[in-house]
Amino acid sequence: MTPFEAATHADPYVYYSGLRRQNGLLFDADLRLWIASDAEFVEAILGHPDCCVRPLNEPIPPAIARGMAGVIFGRLMRMNEGPPHLCPRMAIEPALASVETENIEDIVSRVVDILDNPVDNVDELMFTLPVSVIATLIGLPSSRLQEVAKLTRDFVACLSPLSDEIQLGKANAGATRLSELFTALLSSDDKCSRFLSHIRSGCEATAWGDHPAFIANLIGLLSQTCEATAGLIGNTLVALHRNPDLIEEMQLTPMMVADLVAEVARYDSPVQNTRRFVAKRCTIRGRVLEAGDTVLLLLASANRDACANPDPDSFLLNRTQRRTFSFGSGRHECPGQQLALTIASQTILVWLHRQSTPFDRPYRWRYLPSLNGRIPKFYRDQETQQ
Ligand code: HEM
Image (cartoon, rainbow, N blue to C red; front, side, top):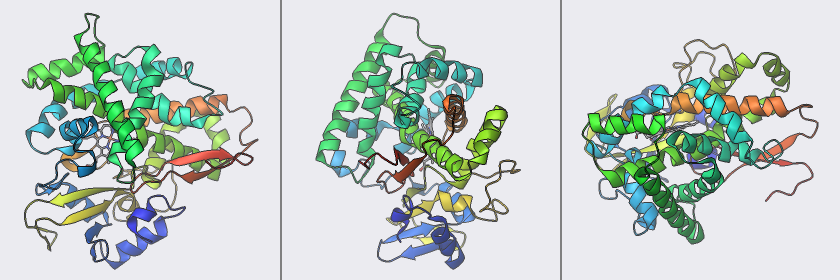
């Protein structure tokens, strides 16, 4: 198995533990990259100033460099270091942190009503609902939510090296249309949402006035939400299928759903790995990395490192001091972590509430093709796998 195949393998965790036993940081000569698999190396590399999110000579992947998707990609805080990372981060992070659970609960209950058969069509719950919640927070009207969720899914295809020409064409069209929608929203005379005005005051306070980058990073909030939150919701449904007793327990004690989702985020991460590119020769925990080296960081493996989480292969709802690398760490650590956990918990509550006879017709699943995301695609026994 390769670490890229592991992301969508039925059980990658035995393979990860073998890597950790060999060495927390080893060089794979075939893949020509370093693989960091234990918690200490993952944390040290993510925290190192010379380990960057993009290669110095390739800020935008060549496959998308000439279209609108590439333009947006190049302005995302996630894909930058220095001021183009810090400025949007300082403006947006406080707004994300200020969103209250009750607000999300309220938005989820309203958005569910516009979804297309959300209980039988789990895709709607996994993909359309979370993106619609963020779009609503930003201030887009409910009449646009289905369209925005679809455009976001089209756009995120530009982030995967597995996408073909047709998908990249749709990603460009999605990027263009999302930019138009946000441009119209920002220039409208209507009162803007509390969340958007929070971000705007963050821009004023930090004197950050790059309008195109501002729009790109609003699109970034949708795209960062899309697949990762779908994976978290999907992997929670997988956990419920594997432990059907939990369904009744959760239905009786809905307060426990937050613990369930938090443990799934650690135990079966929707983001299995991320990459760093070495900008300058550096020594990390006694190992020398050369400028130009690439490191693959196995976040899902770090979650299962006993040094970070005792008894790491047990699924424990009441785990104390849970350490979760699924949201990254260091300067690019996910600023939407709490929000993602809340959206996923509220979504699972909706599913549990509408699930009158659990697993009367159980699902099967396989994982969507990806080199780093672990997102189940569900189907019923009698349905063909598309
Ligand atoms: C389960 C859901 C999510 C997971 C697992 C997740 C995971 C991650 C990870 C691993 C990173 C860091 C990547 C790296 O350093 O290489 C990241 C960054 C980011 N995430 Fe999330 N994320 C989730 C949901 C969200 C949501 C809901 C939002 C916002 C609405 C969000 C916004 C961001 C942003 C803006 C960044 C870039 C931060 C920076 O570069 O400083 N994420 N996320």
